[in-house]
Amino acid sequence: MAAALLFYEGLALYRARQRTPDVIATAARGELTLADLSERRRAMLLRVEDPAFYTHRGLDFSTPGQGMTNLTQSLVKIFYFDSFEPGFAKIEQSLIARFVLDPAMSKDAQLAAFLNHASFGHIRGRPVTGFADAARTYQGRSFADLDDRQFLSLVAMLMAPNALDPVRHKDANAERVRRIEALLAGRCRPAGLRDVTYEACGTWIRMGR
Image 1 (cartoon, one colour):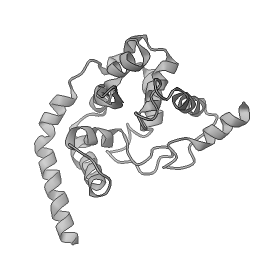
Image 2: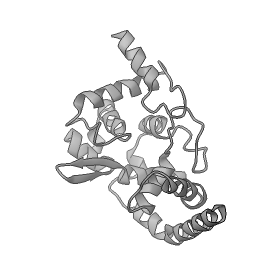
Image 3: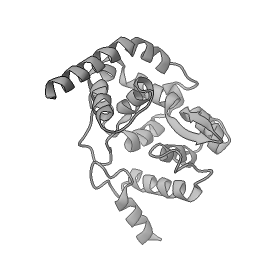
Image 4: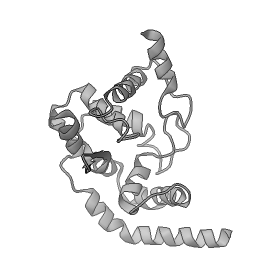
């Protein structure tokens, strides 16, 4: 069984490496460049989505608040999987992130790809892809015209796009934004790796009301 699993995952890595030049070309397409994201907003995004992004090598299972999927793994899910189910796919996703995509793609290129290809759920049956599309769809303005709170409203969606969009789930999105703001201001911190909802931040908010 172990030998079969090793063979299967080794084959998956080989196939992923064969696809990677096309993946990199596809990932480079999009409306936004990294220059469209200010240093301040880059810090906001990474503090929520991948705090150790510029230091890890595709995997991070130790940073509080990171959760089980970092930015590199998210790109693997977008570009290497037609469908994704927990289990063996998660192992494969992690291996591709560590041994294929992260070595082949610079961190800045990964971040730019995330700006253009992150999923923001569906609205009226249409997939919303990338921050520029999400800004128009959910905020009614261009990405460049977003204020900080509107930007964080989009960042807040990334954890669960269809459950946290600011159009159909305004209150849930606003609460997530409040928790993120408390986190960014240093008023609270994640309790552990899996604390992606920042429960301590929610407690602080409720007590402060």
